[in-house]
Image (cartoon, rainbow over all chains, first blue to last red; front, side, top):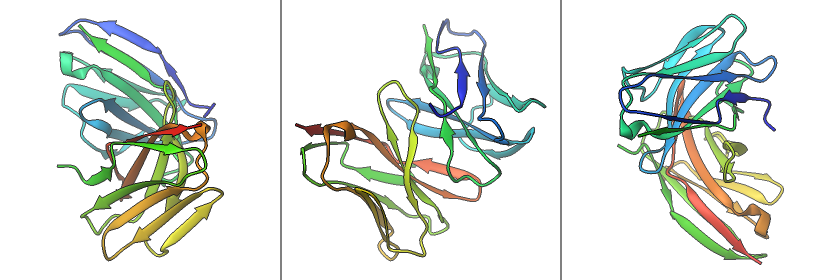
Length: 113
Length: 110
């Protein structure tokens, strides 16, 4: 158990809908990272937050957004969902801004029908 | 464009054998090269990592070999065990950007 929690575990929704994925980092970790894992694209870095502020952006679509709250939990919002958004979404956390030793959560499996 | 190229896609090794997974990159700005292990239904977990100022790092049965001039690095799993059966990802990072390889599914046969 990495200490990172993600909810929900599974999510089934329809095209065009909007969903919110939630992540709680390990106790004491200030950085949160979001990743998308799909069969054809592999594991892709989406975005990083550090202590409430956006630190880095990867291949995140404009339809997706994220935020980190004062209690350091983070939410990833996915809107106008398309079939191709079906994937595993992982959250990871680390102690500080350094990207070393990221601890991954168990993931949220999103299925868009 | 795949920033980190990983091979093979899948690997079958006998118990006690050596598993070797290779990765290559182009961007010389990368300064951190971790390997992650992922079991089905779980998130990736950091296995071992190396920086480009060393050519090899060993932790137990796991060794990273790093060739800066060739822009390649590899993971060697010595005395492979059935419990090592998992998907392995290499990654490369600089600044706040992280790029993963496409993964290698390792099966260790008893």
